Image 1 (cartoon, rainbow, N blue to C red):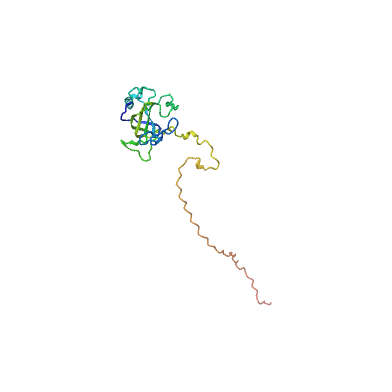
Image 2: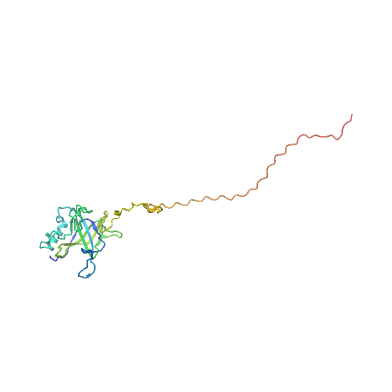
Length: 266
């Protein structure tokens, strides 16, 4: 094993297929117990790290023939010049996404989302979160507030290659210094995450009397209509005194009989 300074490299655009780039998580051993830092300033503390997988499209028959792959292969040979790189268990931190051979966890790479047709690189960042940036419109700048980088997004990684300095499990580390968002992608449910669709929500009947709003999707609520203009009240009715009944007209007087006061004698 040769002690060397880290070698910097930048990946092509790839897709994050597992892990989180913005969250430190405790690493555990084979017994699922937290790993403890054995030396240095953080001695005795739990080993925390960011770990994620980056799937890069295949353009060559082997990853060593890819431009970025040649950089990793050369550094592996320089760090481990005594034939360790020829061992089948040398930790290159690179997986063939088309492989049908189960890994140590029994997972077949070719059956994982985003793996087929890609080389999958396992990146890490120990005890710190990588710098998160974005590149749009020809400019690279800090990740916009409210924006996140999650599994399924397309990114480039700027990092470095170092030896893991382990005789028993010889290999390399691919250390992530900067993760640059290029395009937001379809979210991938990462290992250890909960797939909410697997629980089959929505199949059970809603109890009688439950609010309708709980069983239907949210809808837009229209703006309340303007209140109707009240109709003016009719003026109060003034009581009217009834008129007396109309009497029939007095008929005209008929001829009158006149009686003479004297009688003529014959």
